[in-house]
Length: 584
Image (cartoon, rainbow, N blue to C red):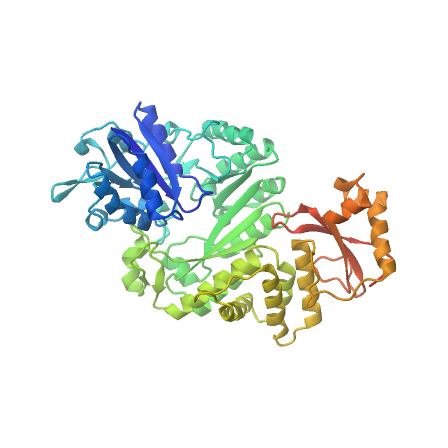
């Protein structure tokens, strides 16, 4: 009997790390298996057909089950049992293993694997009697039998799951050097496994060498708090810096208050784009942090994040969670402002999910937390936040993603921030304005999507209506953001000013033909015909500097060169202030 390992990922760009571990473990034990990766975006019938086609001979199915795919698996289960009545179906992963009612809710499921699967799954694949598979909860007639817990594998005994022949080059690759977390935050499962276990640095370096040699795009470490062993983290960062291939990006989840001056000093020397850090702040409200045992010192976080951001070479994501105990709208607004004012590259606003197995799910009733019964079990209300409050925060999340996290409206947003009392107040008002504007253009009852031009218009209309707004200056800020996004293809009357004088147009043509100027500002264009240069760059004159860190401090026309052949991590064109004699 063959075993089909199924990973239903949330996006095509993701990879299923768990099924790769299990496949390698089965093959190491000389067992037989196949792997099927698909996504939740595929139609149920398409998924059903694909699984059925893989089951040409007697097969057992094993699903890797998480909050993002359990609803899809539950939809497939009855149909699979109907068309493959003699095929046993097993589920593993946190959404099955931590849900005590999983087997009673889903009668099509023949068993649930709890704990880590690298030891029990090869036994299951080899056809071992069900009572002999550790960690398995299985049906014996009308009753459910719970076998003893699965042994915890030694990290150095785990296989490396990638090979040059099977490497999915168009996807994000997941990798781990440790399992477990030393912290026990009540909303999370990562600390439930007890002690943190580490893979030896010898093996880690050899595996990192593979990623570097293959020049993969991105490797995401799934270690829950990568720098819980600070010296070990520095050793790995140093190794990656010394062996940098100039291409691969490595993503880590960190505890920022564990970072010290020695970390900042080391990381300052990393290539821009080599590292990307995600840091879970979650809340800065003292009562909330204490209630969920989120151990951190926000002052230390702020200091560490500031030190990481200062060199400009590491992309920083900071996370907040809405719906935690003791945090009402006012307290959450302070958490938002605290984190926003650190100026991360992305502020990720998430919403509490009451995960099976988490302490907060057990404590929810005492806090008045009500969540959806359907996965991902998102919070609906708490003693401190109403459903209406959470709807507002969802609009704020959408607004932050639209205008802040993309990094493409920083000049205009920076100006608007000065007009309101706090960042949270800005995004609340902008979110509500955006919602009204989208509803005006809704299609089939759904709010219309906003084009780039719609967003520029929206920012201008919204900002112009704020007390104290200078519409002309805001227009210039939006124009600057627009020109960093794209070389203009058409005239936009609501943004563009008057035509340039003939003499000024001549000066621009002369600039493209000046070899010294091209060598200074556009070294990648040296030797190109001026007309060819003009197709990938653009020169615009602003009546005064509108962007941060301009070398001009007073008014007066300033010429700016936008080079679309070179961009920053947010895909904004690199720009230079240049000297031209003629003004607008």
